[in-house]
Amino acid sequence: MTERDTFAAARANFVQQLPLLIALVVLWMLLWGAVSWLNLITGFLLALLVTRVFYLPPVELSGRFNPIWFAAFLVRFVGELVFASFQVAFQAFDPRGVRSNAVIAVQLHTRSDFIMTLTAIALSLIPGSLVVEADRERSILYLHALNVGDSAGVDQVRSKVLAVENRLVRALGSSDDVRRTRP
Amino acid sequence: MTSDLLLDLAAVVSLLLGAFLSLAAGVGLVRFPDALSRLHAATKPQVLGLIFVVAAIALEARSWSTLLALTPVLLFQVLTAPISAHMVGRAGYRTGNFRKELMLVDELEDAVDRATRESERTAGDADSDSDSGR
Amino acid sequence: MTILFTLTGALFTAASLLAVYRIVRGPSILDRMIASDVLLTTLILVVGAEMVLNGHTRTIPMMLVLASTAIFATVAVARYVSKQDLSTKDDR
Image 1 (cartoon, each protein chain N blue to C red):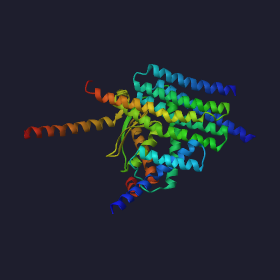
Image 2: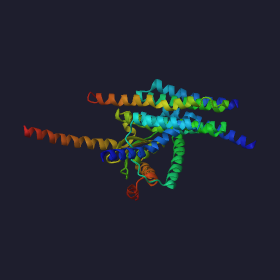
Image 3: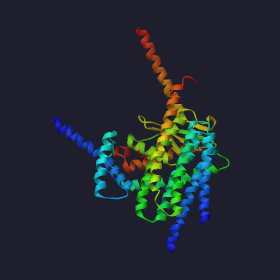
Image 4: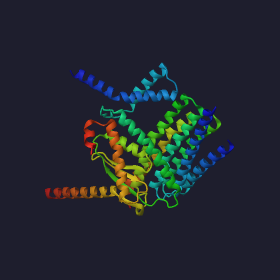
């Protein structure tokens, strides 16, 4: 009985790690620049070795995936990345310089570490906002925002963060999270 | 022939945009007032700069295998940039590497103050408990 | 073509010189670290730009190695700086 339990646990563990394994094999093929059986087999063995030696706690995926919202997230993300990059670039040449910054606490709606991490990564890649600290238990992100002039600017940053979270939850979050984020 | 010319032109424009963003990072690095602002100027526009340069290489080489070979470069940069930005940002905030007078609101400081006040109060309670117990 | 060479070269050179200025002047070690990060990313971009201008793809592995190892120095220094701060906080 216990043997079967450990076997089932091992299989669940393997299934949970499958996305990571596939990603590592694809990366291995990209590094070699060729798709072949040899690459596939050596990549798979290496991925197994790497995930055993450098063990990471399994990521809890929600099991929900909405491609339309994910596409919406990607399009908006790339748009904001390009727009904000040029904004910060022109800021650098602006003769008035930086007037004031702000550290803003944003209370997220989600209770999932995965969504919180993705939100933090997306916000860190968009110029003008930077995650300084994260409170995992209360799911609060502390962001450093560049050139926020007044309280309207603070609100603007906050609603931007919540919009990014909202799109991510709709794309990847659990249905519980979707209900929570709906205003 | 004309499509070749268009692709070349697109490559050149991408290259120049990448170079411009790189220069903007340098200028921001020198002109911005404190370490945290410089971090904004420095790390993130260059990710877009790298995207532009990678696009220029792919447009110039005009082969899918080149684009695939370049994907890991972008992937590594996009995955590691938030980590290094967060580590430097947190270290910069904790060591007080920013100008207080430029900070409009600091909600993290408020939260830290509240937490230390609370922990002091509970620590005080624990002390008095152990005193009475003795 | 020569104009393009000169223009991109000038932009990248200016960016590197500004980063070097910040490395030399930087008041804190974090400023220097940020600036050296910019210098390294500029180097990656220059390797890429050279491929575009000379029309070859031989140095892609170089870009790959630079892009994947750039993070180590930054993380090491940032960790060291936070730890140092925690141990000296009571003195100040």
